[in-house]
Image 1 (cartoon, rainbow, N blue to C red):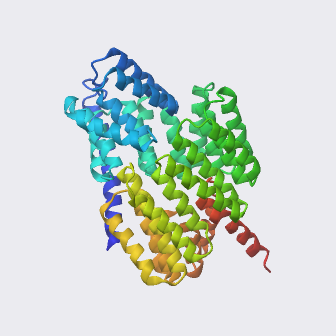
Image 2: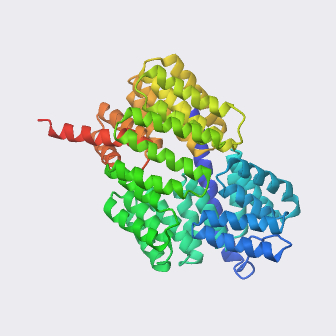
Image 3: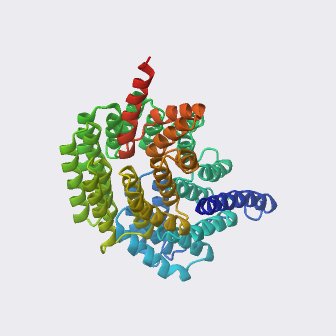
Length: 495
């Protein structure tokens, strides 16, 4: 029953975006002359604020987020009633307190701006408050209202990418490129969309155009490095990252170098690069995130003592900085890595307890991290044959998935349901759930096992190839992919 409900929600959301795109294009044809220059209005009484805002948006398109936030803050200082600048600060800030304060201020000011800006505020505020369907509806209304606004289409496509709605993001970003084929920011994001859906030929073509348009900017090379890494071209990725560093040593591409070294098995070199990146981190959230990525290198080396020490340090630093999501994530990773089931469950409970404390955290960040914790809990309990407790965690996830349109929550539910069914030996029933998460290493590993157990040899070979070539600098990849590659080699060598 829930699977049908989840699929209905996914289908509904997809149809909404596709129908709005189609209807927007139709409206554009019917009213091309009338709306040729129509763009989302920007309401401010201050010329200085408007100039700071426009500078910020240009920096956002160049992925200079630190500078973007600085100029948006300057805009709100010049005009304390600048609602659109406040909601964009909330959208881009990684500081939970600033995010919440800016969102609240934008909502308070909403009635003083145009109806279209009210839609923008509703979209981005509802997204952070985990009201996904109203957020999507507001976004779609804006896209339909301003079919010729390339920046609005880019903003929507960028948001959809962060929501892991890659096919929908591509559709909206391609619309922006239809308006302006040389729109560099849209080329950047659409290249990621193609890469995330496995179409590297189109991804590289978009990146080539992006680099040609802005050869002296750091982000084109940084992005190209990441997409090359996703495709398994690690040496070429390092070349692009180093180009980015030469262009702008302060841009932050050391993180990309570190992530690539980590995937190459050069963990010491990776930690040295992370250390450099941590020193120049533009915010506490960036600093703790980079510390977390560095801690994962110890997992890749299977150095349990150092991994536990580093992850506990991350949890403490996140707690001191008021970063509840990252604190909970550090405990969750400890629960994923810990071999002893009881100790693992204690870490998962610690992660859940963090989310239950009084912290400044958006509803979307809270609920999505809780879903990740419950997924790990359900899977670990199922592995230990504690099916009653596993079912309780799964039921909680099912309830969350039934009331939230968050893609993260949906995928966590399906991943947990598939893991529990595999543990019960119900492979055929597990397959539809696990097929929902074919970008997640653990779901892919379990799906390979389910395909193999049901005799779906061709499907098993296909998912095995995809999993073995997964090059993401995440803890999930570190825990699953290297071991899976070794197992494939071992199986191939058997007579």
